[in-house]
View 1 (cartoon, one colour):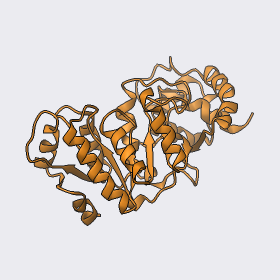
View 2 (cartoon, rainbow, N blue to C red; view 1 turned 30 degrees about the vertical axis):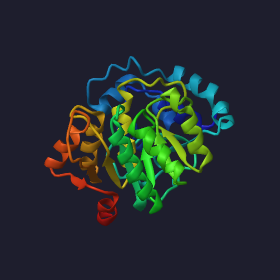
View 3 (tube, helix red, strand yellow; view 1 turned 120 degrees about the horizontal axis):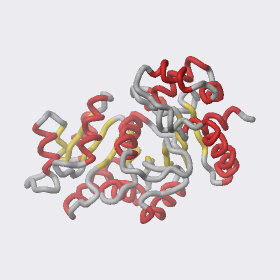
Length: 287
């Protein structure tokens, strides 16, 4: 059996963190060897409470066998963390994914990359801010990275495409599905325009709510900087903002003349020292 089958199989396990998988791989040299370990050995190496109840090597290997042909037919590829083509920017974060699956073209200029994120329920002002910022950044050859969610994410991908720019979307579900499904056409446009779609989740993994905070670390990891367009005070975008500090990425936050419930998170971030972005030139200047 090809070794890549075991890499795919290991990616189905969600009981061991990506960084723990990498540590095990570095110790045992292959996913096949990891999957053959007994649970007590893994528990001792992890050094934490781990029951192993969800560690099902035979189940994972059977899944991997079934989807291996599908991946090729669907134009889905994957990269293990030690592959030379694995995005170097992701290698710089402490909890890099063990494997990333992707479709399309995920090559880009890291020095001109920026994550553009925000609320799923923006107002018209937020949408217009997205349009204005993305248009200027794309005109200066920046790659736009976002999460293909409703709202600011989808708007940033869309306006990047309208301006013939490069954009990459990161999913919080299996690479075989687009979530939300309403953005399926948008995902197709990304692929047709030399963009890419990335996920650390293999086919069949549902868009569980706990996947999205994990997804956000990949968005930040891929990007040189993060731009928060519009965020309420309790927004998932604030997690992305905190990750930018953890990963030593530039954080830019759009400012508003008037603050309300839709953008109060922006105000809080600026007061806490984030770079205030009154216009796209503020970002270009910092870069």
